Image (cartoon, rainbow, N blue to C red; front, side, top):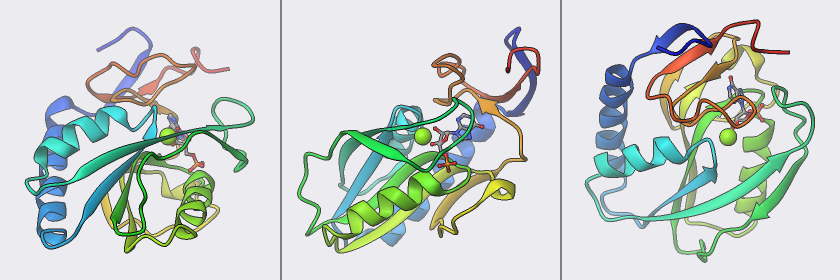
Length: 178
Ligand code: IMP
Ligand code: MG
């Protein structure tokens, strides 16, 4: 536990078990494909590093960094690419690895900007799905957990760049939030 956390939603063990399952599903589905995991920095980095070790088939990884404008707990949908991919994705089966899908605006923007590069396929793997806040519908091919409409931190997810190192996912105490 941590003094700023009100409640743990998913323990380290629950997260690891779930990711192992997702890794097995991905290994199955992509066994005869040319898998490239595309990770969105920085929130998704903890998820990726565990997930890739549960994927038992050869694959590559690449990173993108984006920044969304607006207040730190709200998504504006206006996204700026800070670091682009190094790989040519035209012969790749791209799987976007995201920490959390909230409004879906960030993911929608990314999907559209990757689609124009004509990957062989393009799908999404998200650890957390905050469905209640969805504005743009985005199909999640692989998913970890549903989360209620609360601000969560830990396991890569931050509030003002803090709490990413917590091994569990939890809800912040309201007095910590603005
Ligand atoms: P969306 O564009 O609203 O789907 O927001 C996606 C991004 O907002 C995620 O990749 C996170 O970086 C951030 N985000 C959304 N909800 C949370 C949360 O509960 N905790 C931490 N970050 C969040
Ligand atoms: Mg993110």
